[in-house]
Amino acid sequence: MKVIPIQARSDNWMYLVIDSSNEAAVVDPYDANKISKEAKEQGVKVTSLITTHHHDDHSGGNSKFLSLHPGLQAYGGSKQSAGTNVVVKEGDAFKIGQDIDVKCLHTPCHTQDSICFFIEDKKTGEKGVFTGDTLFLAGCGRFFEGTPEEMHAALTKLSKLPEDTLVFNGHEYTKGSAKFGLTVEPDNEPLKGLLKKAQSDSCTTGKSTIGDELKWNVFMRLDRPEAKKATGETDPIKIMGKLREMKNAM
Image (tube, helix red, strand yellow):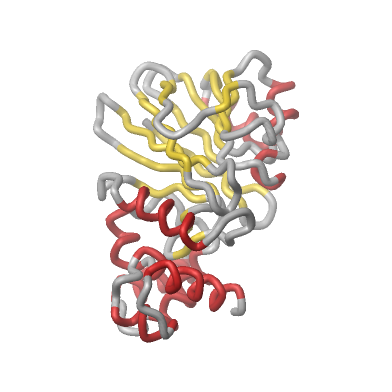
């Protein structure tokens, strides 16, 4: 499989996911014309549209894209995302082309309709997950419609995916996330390496894994003494809430 990140707005990521059969899916196609052009240049047939959550900077291009590519299966966690004609829930599955299996993970918090989409190419064994604004590299989304408990549950669910799963997130927030993480874990060498990489690479998405997140994402390392010390809390839910408050204040 091939996953192509395409920038929208100043820091959003849309994706074109291509199967060996030349069938493809688009993820969060905010800039419908731009991602349509990429699909045409790649010579692929788009058969499905995937929306990670209903916020306009992710779902706002759906109607335009569907007008350019009528008849698609449009998957999302609720009808709040324009054009959604297949509402998916935890554990639902579908395919992209012949070889890419997709599994839906309900991860409410940033929005209640947030879905992370785990993909696996059955022919090559390659794996990825589209995390929208739930999981960022070294960070997580704001709790707009949810609670620290929900974000903890969502990130715990993602932490159980195979460690070689590539992370495709919704925004290029890596530099800020890494800088914040280092205020909590100043001696974290993988996190230092990520910050250095983010300072010279404007596209960090899809180049690291769930295994990496377990090493450098402070929101997934709530049991660490550094997280307890930084927040003054010992309960993981309280640590999660406090870390998010601290990040919001940066």
